[in-house]
Image (cartoon, rainbow, N blue to C red; front, side, top):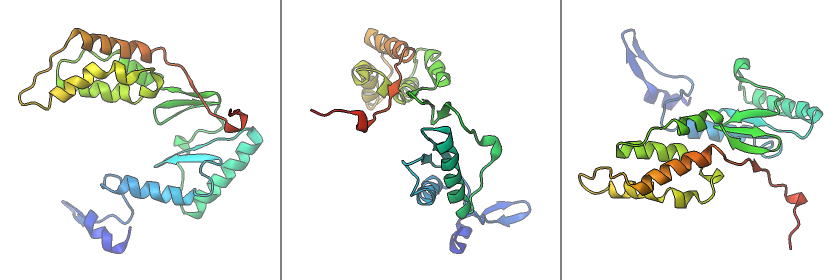
Length: 203
């Protein structure tokens, strides 16, 4: 960390006052700062052979031989920035992997089964907060569900009504239908295929 900024991270313990020399996670601006760093470090490689979200880096290649070359490029870029990797958290040469709550395959993208399970096991909301939690959970995969915005409308209306003073959850038949439909749709979502513009024909 910049010398002048270290005092802003100070904390007191029974052994005295301590300051961070490197940026810790937990600071308000830490994620954005680290993302900016990674964008700079991998600037010449992003969208060519890798993508990065904070400390999650995914490297993609059309062939195994090319993948070895791409791995080396990313390693060299990280090494040049004095960044290190923890081997236990790395996965190499995978045909399928979890990334940001999605399953990434060579054919396309699909939802993480573990999160889908959380949706299917979600109990019927009893409070406004329950509705909010359910919408956050399902909203993450809304792009996989056709007409998602229409289906979810009765639940969104509950949130709008909650802005009124002393509003209580008024669960209706429409809410139940929306709740169950979202669950059902998410258990049968299609895989989203990649778009290859060089294979497309435009008329």
